[in-house]
Image 1 (cartoon, rainbow, N blue to C red):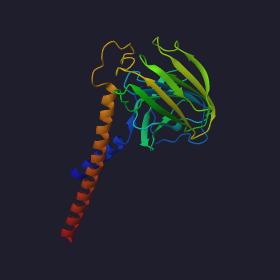
Image 2 (tube, rainbow, N blue to C red):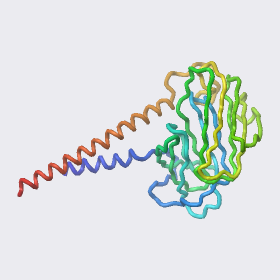
Image 3 (cartoon, rainbow, N blue to C red):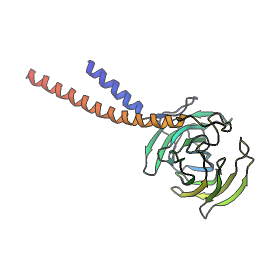
Image 4 (cartoon, rainbow, N blue to C red):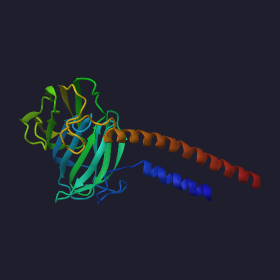
Length: 278
């Protein structure tokens, strides 16, 4: 009986380890439940790309709304840069309230696929990409956006880091420049470059090549969204999350091996007992 209880505990831990959870703000869905999966189309979507904003990486936010959805919850997935640390995976109510959801991440090569269920047509996904090499003054970022649904209109807003120069963006030929200004940020001083794409097909990739020069390793703002005045401490919260994620994956792999060993031992012991009875 003790062996069976142990097996049940390991199985339950295995199930929990297979899921990543978003922030706990209520109205969560279970990934195993059914939802709308076919013929989904996004009416509008905004992609915000912010290099070295509050971390030595790229902060990205995907914000948009599915159209003509008749059944809920919506079962969907998004493709994000491989190795990114997710901050929020939410659905927004009609009143604008965030309801963060459970999500599952699967490695898809160059991308991580984030699967989740949405109780509302609006979505909000924010994450930090793997860290940049801040020791290099000349930065080059190839940010790839791959659509996992048809999208009628996508706005791409790229923010220039503070204290950076020679900022340049090479955008796909099919995009149109909407505007350039420094007045739409919570903190004054940022330059924004906004592009627009229309009638994006499923699986279409759009690459934005970003380059700039920045001599100091500090991000533009600290975690409390105030201008950086002092050097940041060696370990940022996102770096900690990346390390924790690595440890979890290691423990997850070790846990699978442990379960296999335990199951093998159990059936061998059972077989020996049955042999003695015969």
